[in-house]
Image (cartoon, rainbow, N blue to C red):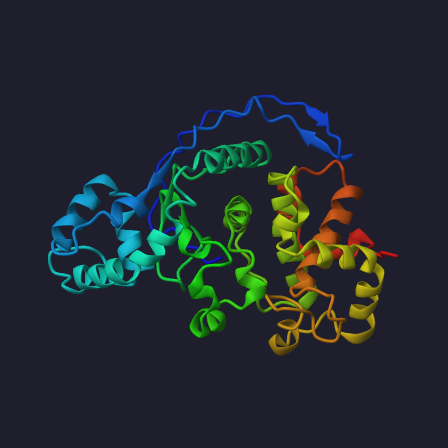
Length: 349
């Protein structure tokens, strides 16, 4: 998902220091930290989406100023970075016009998902637990002070980190059956292999992925493919740490059938990379075949998922982490990708 950068300084974190924790062995055969003692601020989701669509379309400018008084920490990000109308100000005549047009044209979207998101207590609980794991592994990370939901344009972000908040765009979590997703324009923007994931169950994983990317922004875009694969794999591996009891299909975005195919053919997938690709290529036209969203992987069976390079990268990071139990999660995140590849000795069967 897209992220809104942090153009301003972040306010001091409101979260208490991390408490000492122990490891619990869960029924899945994994050691999951007991984070019940990790102190984080209670997650209370601010409903900017509801407040915005309560505006009177005949008095939008006045309504926006009142909205700005309630949400001073989000109104400018919404107007400038999400609507693309520029900052709300006395001299910006475009902003109220753009807001009114959006208010009218997207009201059916708001109405269609209103019942689905009437109560977000379940999401508050999921996010709070995820935040505990983030704070457990990264005690110095400044968690977002607020969580806010909004409805933006369909090409807007699903999850974004602003200077003060974790912002969730419900327009891309409206349910896979939303009529727009099945229109020609909608399918051009979001093919079915993407829109099938536009369900509430994927929100928390999207938030944790965005936090993972915020912890260490990816700067491997011009580096060899294997390093890009591992950089993307780190994010997937971090989501595993932050949501250890969430289904792997939710964390990866793969269908269960795709996951079954990957785990059953991991050795063959890696052998394909060794025999048919140059792991050290920097050619973006080649790299995009293996990293990035697509219905399947070019050159592999139809059962294969897209973005399989990131999945392999995640497996390599998992192998490296298993072989270096003395390293913390934070140390592994900051380990150079080439070093992880060289020392993981990844040879799946």
